[in-house]
Image (cartoon, rainbow, N blue to C red; front, side, top):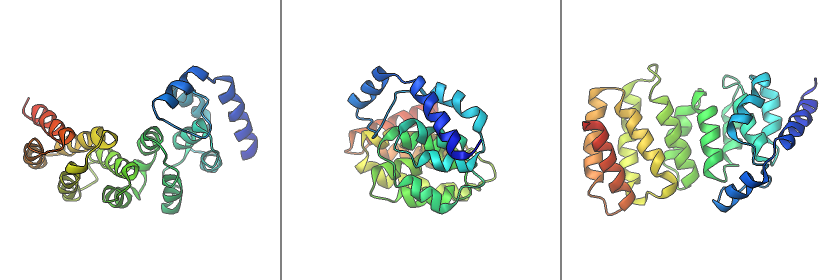
Length: 219
């Protein structure tokens, strides 16, 4: 079956699984897409299985202005074929937290370009890109092929974000610091020091994250 035929077949299956109620609830929660059929993530994962690794199909799907197609693209794409240019093109279409979480969690963190984009995005003024950078490094922290010395700078970068922390980045900050701390006692000690300083932040979200991390690390 040709790639465009697959796209049409997938769109048909998406429409068959559509839930207007789910789509409306997402819209009311501020998760906005041009087109959203409200198909739950578990169903999209099942739908993606027969197409895993079909990178050309993934590129065609992501080009569609449809929530389900973009998420399916992140589930189907081959991370080894993902180029830096493709990452930048996909990231340019980050419009809400869900698409950031899905694309970074399903795909971007597995790419050879993950670390370079992660550090760049963590330093960005764009909150969605910051969230993306944090999610990527949180995932990469468990990769023992990554040297601890490459993780250490993120602790300071994240601490510098603290005063500007918002609901959009809060959970990603906590996730990233927690995963970095798991790598070694030395990194855990650095994270604990950072968390302790964060507890004194005037930003209530940062202070909350600091307290939560201290509790987790000393439990």
